[in-house]
Image (cartoon, rainbow, N blue to C red):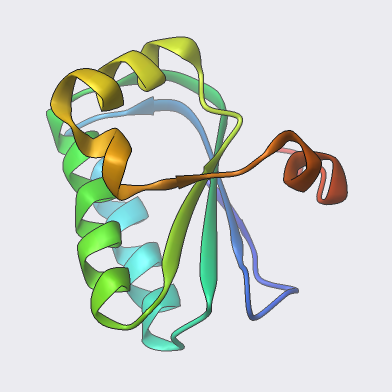
Length: 112
């Protein structure tokens, strides 16, 4: 995981590898920290994600819930097909904003 907070209104969190019960806590902690400054948007880039379990999914939902209370949009970017499928099946898809292709071109992913 890496965080680019050079744009304080829309920090970018890049997640790579596995997001599961062994790695979810640092992401949740980082997101909670970012949410305290109440940015308008937090972008989660999942371009390097290889696997996610229910614990990882719970972190995404937690971020949405906490952000929703503070008017922070949680936007997903570079979402792998398997994650899109999981979000669709679980109904989480409707909660989250996904970046358009134009958004992705405007702000390239940070190196892992």
